[in-house]
Length: 97
Length: 97
DNA sequence: ATATTATATGAATATCTGTTCATATATTTA
DNA sequence: TAAATATATGAACAGATATTCATATAATAT
Image (tube, each protein chain N blue to C red):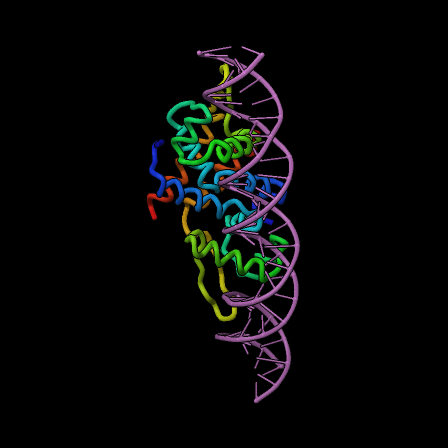
């Protein structure tokens, strides 16, 4: 066994799996700047409203984004600073390749 | 658009996709301690030699592990400190959930 | 009340991906 | 040389997953 037990490694894999999809990463990318409603996100990332909504559901279930409702609109934002840190570390790695 | 352009976000997603599989994360987990040959990795992570070899190929292609040959054996180790950092950040996030 | 706008979601589909199995390659040992 | 050991890899298969399409829900505006 390594440093961690199996249960924990599986949790970590599950976490990174969420970051491992380009639509979701694009959503996170635009949410780094400010909170946005679904249709603005869809516009910015160039995906359908439905596709974005499905992916937001996954991000929400993983507690990586939070949301607030305002009338018709639902505004999403990043859940905490960890999400940004993980994104930035990935970014850093890519820049050094 | 967010902070990054599309090409870069896709690269980041591709990177995290590699971390997003439990067999690969388990391999990284055991390599955090020391370099290991394929059959030792297979033993430690509880996967078949073939499955591990396939996953090492992916890790190698992504430049997340490096290797050296010694006779029959191939010893694998983590490519650089970024891999460990990303793993640890994921670990940190999990611990705070 | 009706139409419009914003969002969510189930089903179907197509694609991707990880494992297994069989086998090839290469090194070491008897 | 033959057998054993370590690793790599292609093909096939099964399971996972992302998108689309259709539609439901809910809030707002006319």
